[in-house]
Length: 556
Image 1 (cartoon, rainbow, N blue to C red):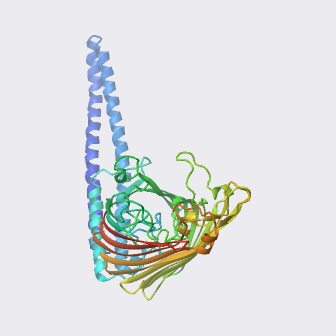
Image 2 (image 1 turned 135 degrees about the vertical axis):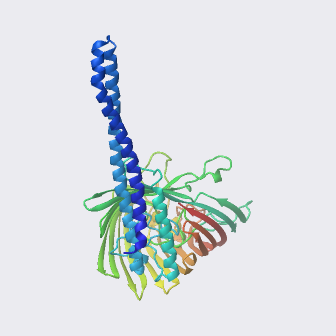
Image 3 (image 1 turned 180 degrees about the horizontal axis):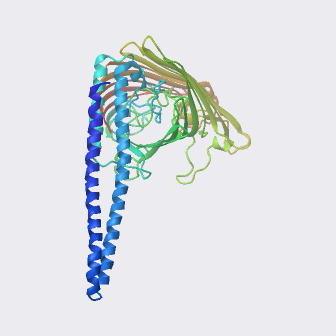
């Protein structure tokens, strides 16, 4: 065992003992005060027999004093019990950190596979469970075997983290009302951007649009609304499972209708889940990402929505219940099975800002069903994951008009040597506007929806994206990605009515981007990103927009 690990527990125990001794000394003083007061009682009562009727008031005052001292002693006992519980938690945290460092030194490759970024380079699985030592976690971990420099860097950061944990024992902690461990996390993200050409959204654009009558074709601005805040709480074990819950918000929920309202982003719920995690299985309930599409391109310029949205990247934050089971085939191979039911989103805008009315998918009377299988392993030191999934949902559009929404997906992540990594995801489906497909377009109408003779058909679409990552050092990386979403143009042209948030039906949307991300420290990020967006209408007109984004992020 490494002797460098002992100072952690020694420091924690020293802090604990110092606080305990202080409280015990105070308690002894109070007890001695009580005893001395009680010893003086008979003397006062004896003298009271010789004095006038004022003795009875002294006895009552003495009794009240004793009761007050007893109450203080009980309070001290309760505080000591609370401190004992805190001591046990602190020592357990110290032991866990020490074991993690020992495992990192003894098995650096396995530790690399289990490492998950806390916040920054955005993961699609926002409620991913803590890694177990017997399987590789799902996610975007693509790096090859870590270099010696990277190992040393991580060890230094872990040591700093341990020092901070010891210092925290001297401070007051934020606690939940249930007294279970709670954690506040997030990122303060500042984006400075510039656009050439017209786009649908200035600070994180998705689609290029036609030029307006009086608008300029270039713009520059800044935003803080992609900043995020998250709360996590860790509860007791239930039936052998670790319990936890989390909720996350950002400030990209729109703007108030006031002067300079673009600088006052409204708070928006992103995800919130409750979890039961066993060693090889998990049960998750809440609002979470689309688990059949777990990957997303790496971008700091687009955190409010995943990068490549409306360009082949399926995504949505959907209420759901799902189960996961991990089968450990060997030390370097894990098979994961996921399945669940989801709210049947259909992409329609709510009819009211207050009351909730059923969507076309919810009116079908059944949820959406989804499943995914994935295989994760290592070959010649390179970690890889390949997965495939599917989703089926039913939609009801009145007058007996039902249609099926479905998709099949494939995702791949692969390490390519020491410095390179490849990720990609592809889909094919129908009526997927509610799940981020078809450039937000989902159905086709032959006429007015109020006419019982009108036919409603699902729009077929397909798309995908790929990304190449170059990471020569632990602090610097470069990512290049391309994505495309392609609703079938022949179906769009043949339909007289295509419900869409855009002025014209869109048959293709392509996005290229390249970014450079530098970690000045483990919690400080700098990013420069270049976007090119090309959007084509069903009739053939195409529009191009360019976006440059400089981002500074501080993770807490």
